[in-house]
Length: 110
Image (cartoon, rainbow, N blue to C red; front, side, top):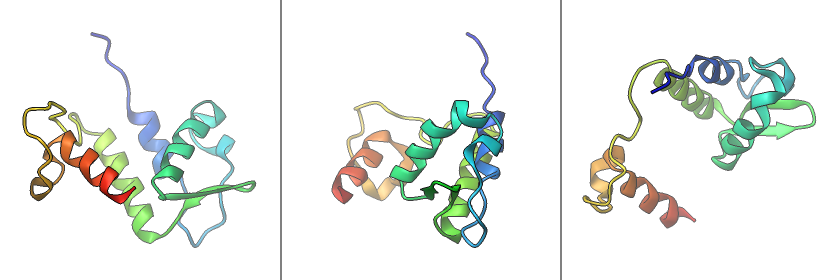
């Protein structure tokens, strides 16, 4: 299996300015526009970043911490959610141990 490097995405997430600073143009982030728009739109869907003609920035201080938490996950082996099987069902009380619980929470919010 080919080993891929998650460090570029970690650096990209850490380069997003806090909400109290001016947005940063996507082409100035590590990896530039090539990876910028896809990841930026995904993070905007989560409500974690604000996108404008000026660029990108965290939506709030907690959102900034979320981005850095994701970056830390990218810098370590493993996954946020290890179990994406259908065996356990949605058990919200177990947090993010199982993918089905995340899907349940996302759909409950929508």
